[in-house]
Length: 164
Image 1 (cartoon, rainbow, N blue to C red):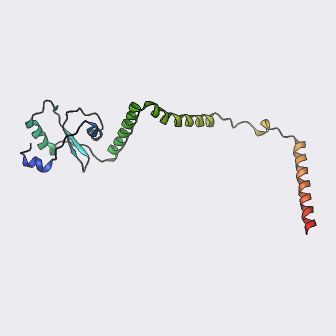
Image 2: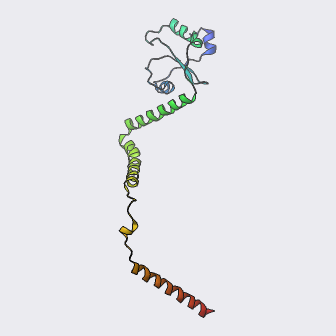
C-alpha cells in the first residue's frame, strides 16, 4: 500500500484506537478490526464487504481502487442529520445511564415528576362548579356592605369640603 503512488495521492491512512469514532460516523456498531474509508468533506463513508480477518493486501487494494464506482453511505442530507442527532442523543443517554444510573434517574425523574403533577392538576380540576354554590352570598350582606361603602364615600367627600 505504501508503494502505491496513486493511493497515496487520494487516501490518507490512519488507525483508530477503539471504535467510538467509527461508530459515530457509521451510526451503528463497528467491529473492532474494520476497514472504513471516510470522506470528511462530504461525510460519506465506504465499507468493505470482506471481513477484516479474511482481507488480503490484494483485496484491500481492489476495494480502494473500486471506491469511485461503489455506493457511498452517510452524507450531510437533512434525513442523515436527523438520524445522526437521534443517534447521538440515544447513545449519550445510554452512556449516562450506564455510568451514573442514580444521577441520570434524578436528572430525568425530577422534572418528569413535576410535569406529571402539573398535568394531573390541570386535567383533574373541575371548572363546572358555580362560584355561588361554594361561596353563597346573601342579599342582605351585600346590601350592608354597599351601604357601608356609600357612607365611607360621603365621609371622605365631607372631609375634603371642610379642608377647602
